[in-house]
Every structure is written in structure tokens, then in C-alpha cells.
Image (tube, rainbow, N blue to C red; front, top):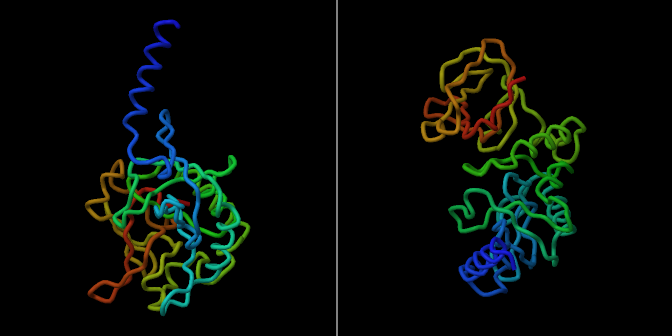
Length: 251
């Protein structure tokens, strides 16, 4: 065996000894650090549990809520869950990780692939999930946003419902508080890390400014789309925080 190949074989053997846990916890790909698991059951349109009892959250997307406890659920929540079941339930899938592998709830954060299909992208393409960024995991966000724009333009799935349809900034109401929405408007006040449009004040929290190359350079009258959860300030004003550059779309 040539010396270079022998050295490579030794490195791969050494790495294989570092793989933690029993094999049923998922087979790890040494070169890519991806993980193979079998899906036990699907919880909703963006979360499932493996047969080894690991909970996995599909990275970069958010599906409509299903009914549980006193929560009546959101439009197409059950449709989204059925679609994810159809795609992955009971199957062996590949988990591809970004910079952060788990969230604060202990769930694995992954892009999921089955039979060559990118499941996260498919759910967005069908209009059964929207883009939802998890800093610092932005590896596939641009591709997901492209798929979402196409689904929005065709008014597929959730984009054909009043709950998720693009909301105009001058039409925000108190009933929208707590909802994650895509909001469109024109800039009527602007500063380095914040701006105002319609009824909405938009700002970038200090801890999230590391993801932006520089303060925003927006013009008065410029049309933008922002994404995030609508909140109400102590002064009774609507506001929304941007946590990454992907939460702002300049028209």
C-alpha cells in the first residue's frame, strides 16, 4: 500500500475509535460528521423522534403548530405533519449538522435527507413550512429562502391562508401579537440598528449584531420585508427584532 494511503487508513481508523455511543444511536459518517438514524415517529411538521429516542428538529424551518392541550393549532398544521410522516416515518435518514448541533431543549438540529431528497427544503417548497433561522446555523438559509419565495409567489400551502399571508406594516393589529409573520412595508424612519415602517418598529438586538457586517443602510421610502415575532412594548407599540440578516429582505 502506498505510504499516503497507509497514513490515511490509520487516521480513519483512529477517528473511528472516537465515535461515541452504541451503534443504535446512529451511524456517524467519519468524513462529513453526518449521522444516520431511523425515524421512530413524527411529532409535527418540523420535529421527529428517532428509534433511539433522540428528538430531532428540522433546521432552518418552522411548520404550523398542531393542536395540543388548549392550543387549537394553526392552519395546515396537521397537513404538514402528515406530509413529513409520508416522507420519513419509519425510514433511515441522514442528519447533516451545522455549527450548533443541539438547541437549548436538547433537540438535535439537522438538515434531513432521505433517498437523496432534502426534506427541509421539500417542506418549504410545498408551502408547508416557512424559513426560521437558528443562529449560528445559516448554512442552507439562502437556498431555503429561494424555495420559500417561489412557494409564496404561487400561494402554496400556508401562503394561501390569512394566518401566514404577507402582512402589511400599516395593518398590524393587537390580534397579531405573538405571531411569527412576514411583514411588508416602506421605511418612514431609519437609524443604524433600527427603523420604523407603518405601525411597526424594527430593531436588531445588541447580541445579534455580530451576524451583520455593519449597521443597516436603508433609505426612506424603501420597501422591505421583515420576518419575526410581533411583540408589544411597554409603551403599547408594536415591535419586531431581527436576529440575522436573513430576517430582512430589501425589495
